[in-house]
Image 1 (tube, one colour):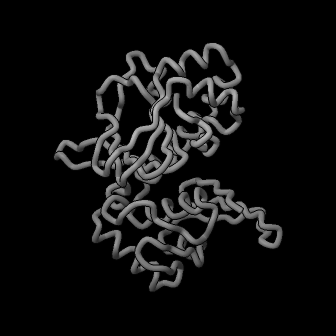
Image 2: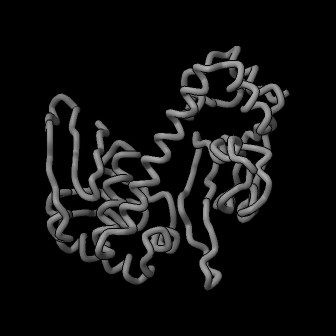
Amino acid sequence: MLSITQINLQKSLLFKNFSMAEFYEIGRNAKLKSVKQGQHLFREGDSGHYFYFIKSGEISLYRYSPEGDEKVFQILSEGDTLAEAVMFMQPALYPVNAKAQTDCEVVVFPQQALVNYCHNNPNFMMQIMAAMSDKLYQAINRVDQLTLKNAGQRLVSYLLELSGAQKSEWLTLPVSYSVLAGQLNITPETLSRLFKRFRQAGVISGKREIVVLLDVEAMCKLTNLPYIVANKDLTANNEALEGCCNLSLKWF
């Protein structure tokens, strides 16, 4: 049995309210697996026998375009779970490819362990539904990004969503420019030009993977996106931003 005390599963929305006894129960048949950079956890269409918790590293979820290019949907990192929704599909088939962006360690949970635990623990079933709903909300935001009119709007929307996730105006881009460009459906050259334009306009600063949001309202105006600041109270460390792409970002 996996030594679950060595794995901080509470970083995950799925397991955040678990007691130690519950960790032992769900982890009875779990295993720790090392995944080398470039190695796949699973491929699109494979039978979904397992779901995963990322202990360390980054995993990209992608599909191939008709031209054979990788279209990245999401980059997951430490504390994230993946493929738990697949465990309840009939038939259970992975809908995307999952590839290690870096060397990773993941906790591997058998499908039946999750299904059995849900049957015996209705409260956990509600928790997993809440986690899936949160992921659905995030997916809707990503679709919203891709349906915006131009590349600048999609980049601003992405930066605002990242600010909400990292709870800071100092952002660390979790992926390379080439991967981010693919996620936003623009070319890497266009992405570089947009970052340069934003820096020259004084709405952001930083270099390469570090981005500092200096003036979000001006950044939205620069790309013709609506922006509203509500309940602003910096002295109380409680600011809510509602802006581009209908995002509601509460991060202080």
